[in-house]
Picture (cartoon, rainbow, N blue to C red):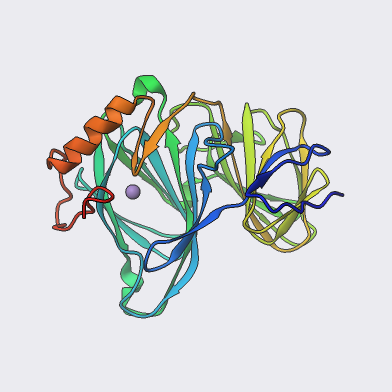
Length: 302
Ligand code: MN
């Protein structure tokens, strides 16, 4: 058993399978706060995952909720996954899709999409919001594909339970199951809900893996990992995970795609492409979201 005790944002325990520990930064988004886990200073990406935000848990009074005005993305697919609450997604393809806990919204930006994230049907009452928004970078040769949006209801995801652990497979393959959610490169994303004392062994078959403890506390190959911490694991044999409290853990992984540049909501392997995306947003060259009149200007250009 080893305990981390580091003052720095990231640190390493050389004794264990934990290569790096990432402490997220708290970001106030106005209506609520998020913990931004990726990109981290010492680890920009895990497999294709270039961005990982833990939203909430937040409670809103009636009339308040998430309220993100239309904004553009390029070069990524965004994955929205909720534990609690509801978000209404609208995009420039004309898609209007509410998302509920356990479902997946996969929005592929490719060469460019604009979307808004607004309150759902729970706006008229006290509501809660808790979940994860992550972005996966697209492989270089697919960065300029047409934008796309897919919704997967909660019942579409493989779900099973073993030894006090409820598994939900969001993307990729795990323990002989395969998720129907579209991927662009080798990607793993799973939600593991542990009862106190629950345990499992995870085969680390991807090139990179990390665990994020959204709630509770787990022990990973002997290292204690509390809530709000992501640990990047050494590749190799199966790793044992056990829970010392009721816990919610996200497992991410995949093959590295190479370096990406990120500015605001734009991701690309090319700095020049990001400059084009910025100018296109300034110039109003993106298709807008039907039913929306607002938009978020480029940072510093309000
Ligand atoms: Mn967005």
